Amino acid sequence: MTAIPYMGEICSLLSAIFWALAIIIFKKIGDRVSPMVINPVKSIIGLLLFMLTCLIMGVPLIPDAQFSNSDLLILSISGIIGIGIADIIFLHSLNILGAGISAIVDTVYSPFVILFAFIILGESLTSTQLLGGALIIGAVLYASTKIQNIPVNRKRFKQGVFYGVGSIAMMALGIVMIKPILNTVSENIGLQLWIAGYRLVSGVLVSGSIMLIANRRQNILGALRDRKLWFPLIVSSVLAAYLGIAMWVMGMSMTTASISSILNQTATIFILIFAWIFLGEPLTKRRISSIVVAMFGAYLVFIG
Image (cartoon, rainbow, N blue to C red; front, top):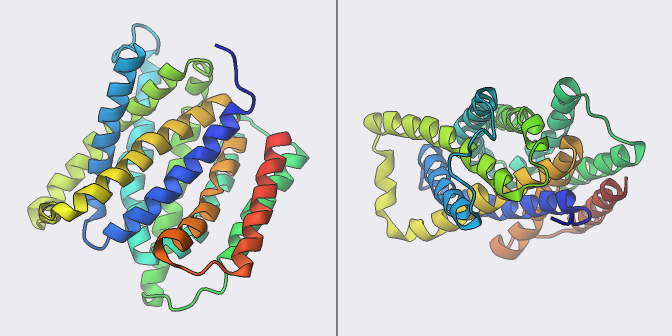
């Protein structure tokens, strides 16, 4: 298959767009549906779509000798950490902080990936790419300052930030630890999507178990009786657990973990844009200038 120039970088940017759209919807339904319900539901929907995609592409659901037992173990652990646990914590943090403040917390994602990639994979960036990454992170921090009217007390706010940073660090670790496996299928999109789906299996098992245990103490599944919630829940699940993860894994497969994470970081900028379009939040001069700087940073990452 002929390689498309910058395919990894393009996928990483698309992942950021899909994730940002999903965040907007998750926030809108998060007050009515528990994160412990949203996470397994979205993961199940994503898993079913990945299975269907693999069948359409002719990829066996159980590849013969393609991956070693240790590979499968690493993928499973990655799914438990990055999907089964981290996503629940992140959604809980999102409910506490709201989309805007969560966008600030999200800026720690690429530094965590770069840190883990340096420790685990020995990756490094060029000076141009480092400059681009700094511009992106600086832009999103600048756009998100002057926070006013925080709807929680200081203690709750700190908890939300702690949960957010912790969950994002877990997501970063979960993807970096499977990078060597992704490198072996960098030219096989079908197997890349199979890996994305396989990670969801362990994520579903863990998050589903957490949901059932929690439901015994409190009827959190009762919220799903409201049929009006199903459409936004399904749409956000497709965006986050299928399209977003597919582009995330493909992007990570086709470029370095550091570059992919920096481009994923533009999700914060897209959240600001989509919050303006769909939620009516103001798009100030500060935020517009931040978008321009972040896009220039992304360009530097591309050419670096």
